[in-house]
Image (cartoon, rainbow, N blue to C red; front, side):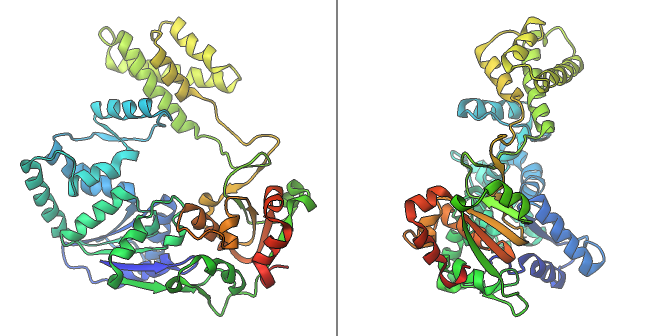
Amino acid sequence: MKIEVAGAGAGKTYRMASRISDIEIPEGKVVYCVAFTNAAANNIRRKLAERNGSLPDNVKVSTIHSFLYTELVHPYYHLLYGIRYSRISTINLPSQPAFHNRRIKELEEGLLLHQTVIPERAKWVVHKKSKDNAQIRAMRDRVLAMFAGYCHKIIVDEAQDIDKNVRDVLLALHRAGVDIELCGDPKQDVKGFGCFREIVDAFPKNVTYNCECHRCPQLHLQISNRLACDDEQQVADEKSCAGSIDVIFEADVDASSHIENGDYGLVFISKKNDRFDTHTKRDKGSRFDSLRHELDIAIRARHGDNVPDLEIKRAAYYVASQMLDLIDAGTDVGTVVSKGISNGYYDYDKTRYARIAEAIKPNTSTEVEAIAVTSIEAVKGLEADKCLFILTTDLVPYLLGDKNDDNKTKHLLYVALTRSLNNLTVLVTTEVESRYSRERIMAAFGEAAS
């Protein structure tokens, strides 16, 4: 296993494309390049095409979910557990755990695999599932041998996003002799999984550190480096501009007007409050799919023995469209769900009512009174010449050095401090100033702030 720890702005994706282009891949072997978002996978494909004229046939670039399903679950899961999934479902799952788990079970009964459980199923294929018998374990050994026979290498970008299931998959493949390369930054683990850090600590002799930063001015790195261990201290390259950090206080400005007129490329906050909101609209397509799925089950429960399957699907499609139109026109959820009952499409049942109501919930959008900004999680991987970072009370103890735990909150602060190419403006909320004082906040930025 080869591990590269590279901080923000180190050019990880560019170097990865260069490395892949230089690999001599044996005949009949494949290199898998895995990213955690579609945008990152597309970026890697583009850089590979720029270097090679096209994407090489023996290099497969995909998201982690696509890789795990296409290369492990789809071809092998049925050999171990006797189930061959027909397709992947991306419907919205209920927020309540009981409904959530029941929905996943219903999907699997229909041979549909929800995208959120793909990593777990892949883990069962190559690592283990509780209560596996000797026959399954023997088949797993055969599967691992088959995969290792044609996989030359797996390269994982943004490895800090590895969760425990993906960790177990990669370690199982490593033990089976598959060559694994990981590149990421534990300081940007904004989901708080901690799994990449575990791997780094478990294979210290396999780790190299890239401390270059082609994004941030050294002035900014003076602050963000406080959050990094000695091996991960970053240095700006010679082409970086001098940069600036401006600290302003919410009590002194009209925040809405300042943000609107500030010409900021990115505006972000760790978590919303009553003045700043990070809500975004729910995707109507996934909302429709979730509702249609619930209606298909409900209509089938009442009419399944007397109506052809195609007619049930058509009815679910039609009723879902009608319901969403009513919701978007302002009709309340209860009235819409009850109308479907009164029209005879499905019967009244508390559980069914709750599940349809959950699926039909209208889009949630930014509160009218609140200022629309972006979450720090959403700007990870992005950069802009001029950024506004809204400082809230959760991050301040890490900025001041009062806390130094290696956790999600600390990682969010690091990401916030490393988005700007030139100017970083820090907007200190009234809660922060009240709790920590203006003097302490200014002292935390020291000579870097103006």
